[in-house]
Length: 192
Image 1 (cartoon, helix red, strand yellow):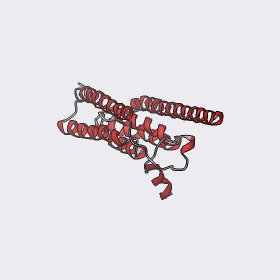
Image 2 (cartoon, helix red, strand yellow):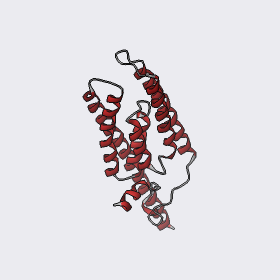
Image 3 (cartoon, one colour):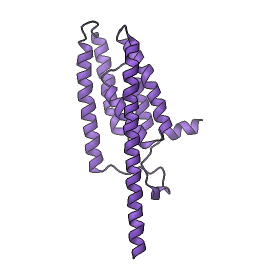
Image 4 (cartoon, rainbow, N blue to C red):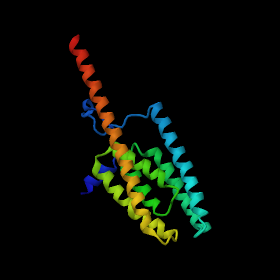
């Protein structure tokens, strides 16, 4: 079981059908990858900051200064971890879920990490992390002193399912494009 768990956390790459000879080779980031990763970081940080300001100023039960500091620090760690989500998708998603138990500002980064996990791995690890999102949200709700912790379960399950669905869509699209590219190359080689 330890080998299987390590295989979930080890570096990975999205491989095309012709790349099966080198399964652990991680390709370097392209300019498009860098720009997308920078955009994901900026969006996660900006939306996380907005969520933190809304949650911190919640009039019924405002956050203490210690809770604000912990939330901001854990949210920043979640956002920074997005830079490694292509190389270690399971580890980053797991870290975001665990840190998300004490951070509302890291929830968007956690959803990006979950979506990336669905892109780069099989669906089972993504479902495991999605299942951990619910208890993490309940713990966060209790930590913030909210009285109705059950109200966070349905939205959390819905957003986690949407993140997985988006990741699986991207994965299927990439695999289709890779297959079509390989077929076109083979057809071109057969004509010569």
